[in-house]
Image (cartoon, rainbow, N blue to C red; front, top):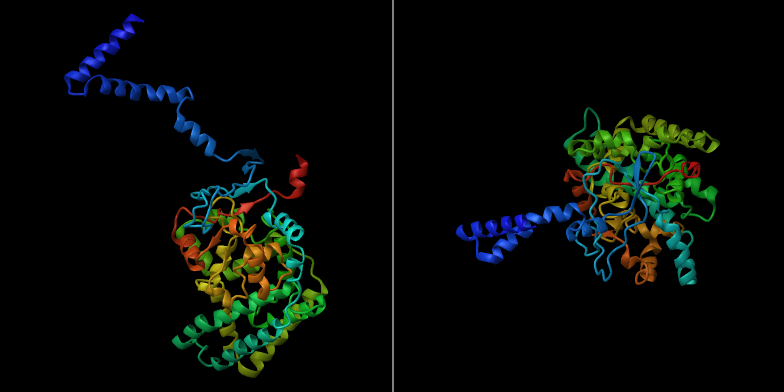
Length: 414
């Protein structure tokens, strides 16, 4: 209209009198003034791009579910989680878990790889005969160190006791625990029964009769990764609410051994079987024999070692790095550094979840066989300690940084 044109002309004149730069500045000012109106009408290009970048979400049972797993960008050359060019969005300041409608990625990748690579994969499967001999040596060193520190451990422990318990005791305890991780997959002997008996034996210095229960819960962790109420590796809502602050994460990590040991009992209790009873009896006999022969000192050493093994210790970082999600929906992350030498190659965690019946000694070969077509596009950590540090001290990373799925019964009910 003529009145609107007159107002525009008067606005341009005022801009020229104030040194606004003439007609071009007037037009730019006018465009800036009109931009919010365009955005409100949905015409803003930035708004359109931001909307396109948002993942598709569906609300179910009070949670927002990701419909599709985000994929790395085309042409990616570095899949390192923190420094890579993968283009996966960081997961920060979460107030709920990362709920997804996608299946866990490992079974699908396993089927494709076996079909594609055949004997190159299947020839790597099967038990590793060397495992049992290495484990017996580590077990002897741990029990021997407990005997050596039997006096130092009493009355609160000396500085020497605490230093050796942290440096050596925690390392040996973590190595024995991760040996039992291998044994839980029946990778020390051909016989399932022999693996169970050996696992009970190896677990003695941990003091808790955990092996048989751990084996059951760990198989569910593989079969139902991320499933709420089934995968007991997942923190509960209560834990996430209580421990997501920096002080809360520090407390949780300091006591992680006991969270890991006792959470499954509360979340998903199991029937008590003859195998559980045997596990308890062996543990009672071991503790009684040690106390009778050497006193309580070695027991305090074993307890301190087990605590530090899952606490503020470099090797304990694998508990965080393996399944906490820092970008996209990267719910499993591998690590290929030097700490694998002390942890039975558990850092090869995507490879392990894809093929749980490939033993520690052949996981590097598995990665090599499948790297070009499969593992080159899978996120990984350069540093376990770096992942642990970011988890503990970055306030934007919380206990909610885990991918979860609904149980099958809940999805069927819809």
